Image (cartoon, rainbow, N blue to C red; front, top):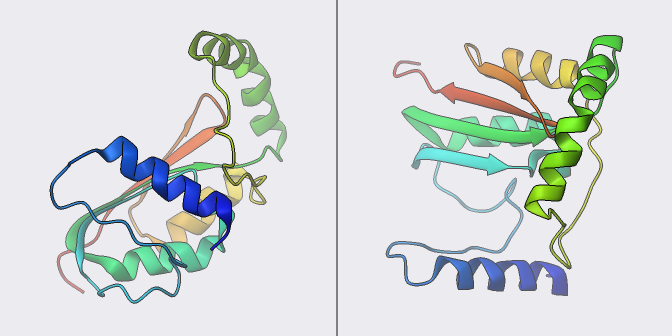
Length: 152
């Protein structure tokens, strides 16, 4: 594990404090020995663009219990004219929000540009997660919310 990953896990442990039942695992999410249908809730915040998108969604779908909820907040890139228009319209809000929040990337945080456009994300998510709720947000984010069906 690289130094930056160790540092990120150490920071997460520090921020979590003494929360009961919290466990940190270091490893490759796509291949780690996690229990199938072992989780009621899975949340991913700005991480799926670091992985194979299809593989990540299939893995999360596999790990989620029937009736469980998956929430993803992700990053995408602009490709279509409509996506660029939305970006340009939101640009002033993004600048002000980042300035007010004094937003910076934590030192050592792995950074990757998004490979997929918003439209590509939406299409792939709808194919892999039938009934998924897709929303595009300001600050170059989108969200996916999906409840795994109770029956197979």
